Length: 75
Image 1: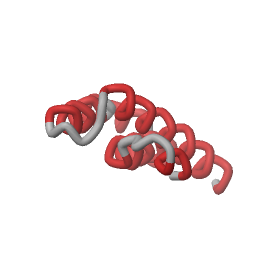
Image 2 (image 1 turned 135 degrees about the vertical axis):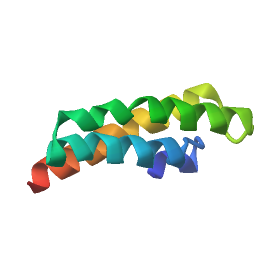
Image 3 (image 1 turned 60 degrees about the vertical axis):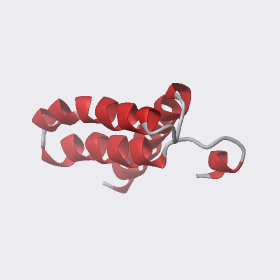
Image 4 (image 1 turned 30 degrees about the vertical axis):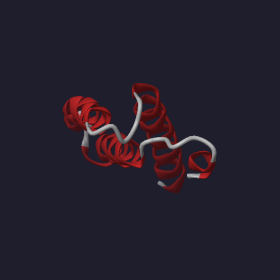
């Protein structure tokens, strides 16, 4: 979240990608089939002109990394 002070990354894609990364760790690999949903949310944020493509991609990557690392270390 600290990066949004300087650059408005997409929190929507960050939260969704984080949830999709954590779910397969807990429930199994089939949940990775939800990953295309991140692209759909990113696309909608760009179409609504709330973010650029780069901001949605960075949001998804940061969200997946942060949530995945936190969830994995907590288990």
